[in-house]
Image (cartoon, rainbow, N blue to C red):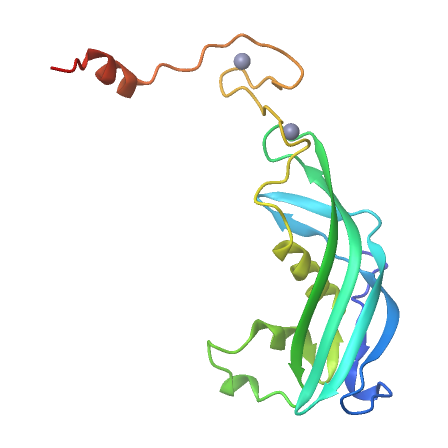
Length: 178
Ligand SMILES: [Zn+2]
Ligand SMILES: [Zn+2]
């Protein structure tokens, strides 16, 4: 990804007063998302976000809110699809991280977005977007997808292929109530 460094903030160098949230705007670069074998990109891939940082005991509560548009292939017909999302996420980040060797499986993944007091906003924001995605990314809600027989796009052509016979139905047809 040439020309793009992750957007980061140095939590311990912010002018924070304990318990008093600091709210500011920051442009965040959103890296592409790999989903269901396809790459989804943000357009634009740099978005303005509202960042809220609060110095709390033993760490920071950080919230980000932004709007973004994700573009990629429709899961049914593979034609371009896009999705507008409003994303809002808040998490707690420890000021002093325990040594990696002491981390257990139950430790929050949020720890991995932070290293030496530097928070990787890009990775965190990208992963937050994933939580906001619908179950399927579609070009339109009623997308008919590709024909499993001829591969034609059923939104554009009526190919007329018959669905394959399902032997289970034959069994049911033979069944007669007493
Ligand atoms: Zn589609
Ligand atoms: Zn067909």
